[in-house]
Image (cartoon, rainbow, N blue to C red; front, side, top):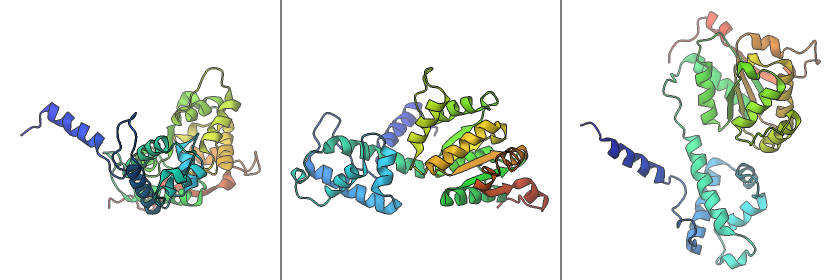
Length: 285
């Protein structure tokens, strides 16, 4: 029997209300009883252990107003007998933010890959290169002709690694417009009064210490000054960077004659799918 539309909507609403890793809290505006705070702190402790996360990492991801000390004090609620033992903290505000973040992080980590994603040998090669770049926090360049699924893999990697994905627009090839596109991908407010240096600093503030991979599709479109900005952001933030593009990307990042190879030396993971395919690759698995 075909499901009725309101049945599907009801199922979607139920799914949206379901908590997978956190615990239900009273509605905003109502007090959270101490046992609930303690239960959440215990669940949070288990969550960090399961995902091998530190308080510093979580504080960075939660953003302004959250420090490593704040996270540490909240975790101590799991062991204290009374919240009065930890005075001076708005635990209810912290609890609601942490509960929401736990669900968001779980959703990102368990995100389904795009429906049209098909695991082939080329897909495995690309994902292996991306994993290596993320693990080493280095830069990677993945090149091939069109039609080999680079964009699908880039989007799949973005979901898997909670990255920052952007596809370079032809109209945003230069430094200033690329910074604008990256800022928007990070959901940063971009007003007319912000110039390129301001955007650059705001992007660094947002990404520094986060470890989030920056995944750039159609990277062969980037002009030299934009690629230099990518290198600077990688250096300043310590974020891995994965560049997807055509064979033209190889020529773009080869700066040995321009800047003594400062960019090309940072790209320690390289994958040319054209060379691999010529050797008889790309069999479905």
